[in-house]
Length: 159
Length: 333
Image (tube, rainbow over all chains, first blue to last red; front, top):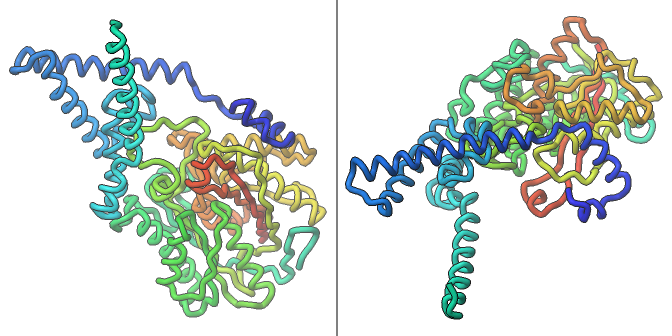
């Protein structure tokens, strides 16, 4: 917690939080980073291998192979989510499975499965983007900002 | 009878004439599997939603408790119950099935002892002859409401806890054989400004300590009066904070008699991080394991301090801190 937030606490609350902090187990950040690096790297290597397969054995170029590569990773991720395996891998791997496209597929599939009991329209449809919605909103928004910066630089005769 | 500031002493000593505990598959692999009346291998319990599954757990616990006392549900005057679902639907829907006049309570995970304290008060004040007290929780239904979808791959920190899939019920009566409820201390809300829903133990520990201290102050007794003092669902983190806090305040409870239902229910090799939580945690451990041990004569006097974190998914997103509460009930045989 930042110091700004702590200033709002009463002295008793502050004293307790410091006291509790010493007893709580810390998040194993270094271990989590190493695992995320290994698993994330493994997923990206798998993606690279898939891309090579598409280029070498099927009629794809380096550019057009991106779509089927992502699709295969998404399908694997959704199947693992559906079979209840993904969350166990993710507990071990952390950001390793969350950051690549596998994480995005998992947010949608898991929300869709979870809300199946509330029906297709209000349940699945209404909740599917519950977690991934903000990724799309801020992804699209930052793409827009970057595009404006690029156009402005071009217009000023740069790069 | 009010004793001290916030403690009821039940002079008639209402009796828990029967009790039942029902659990799910994860509890079946746990350390207390033998103390459950029913264990289900399917988290759905054959229902088409997790909310219905939780209702089924609670119905089964209530019906089992009534039938173990060789009674019919018509003989019970009141049903007091609580759970974690929005608008306590598990309890109200169970009350619909049972058809017993119903009082709903919400104290988050402290509902188990809140309902038992109120049931005992009704009996002690002669407002009823038989009252059924119960509480339930369902791991997936609770995760769905309070956190993320179950299959979502978010990494949980070591302070997170595992919501128990289970329900416990106790039938409290004026007379009969069984463990007796002697007194109850109603807790006040304690909020130490913690905001992390993945660290409920640390948030709830001060509330548990406050109620425990109030209990001993009001009754002017010592922790050694009890054979066992069990908090509801502080887990590993909250339990060690509570022990150290009591130490610091000069109310040391000997470690051999101080435990937590969230630590008892699962085995060490189960992936539950800091331990169990939920209404079902203190309810199944108390109505199953602890009462069984009392009946075997291993324990004579116990104090259950059920702890509750009174947050909502909305209050958490609006950056509110987590208000916590604890209710203590003393059971003697």
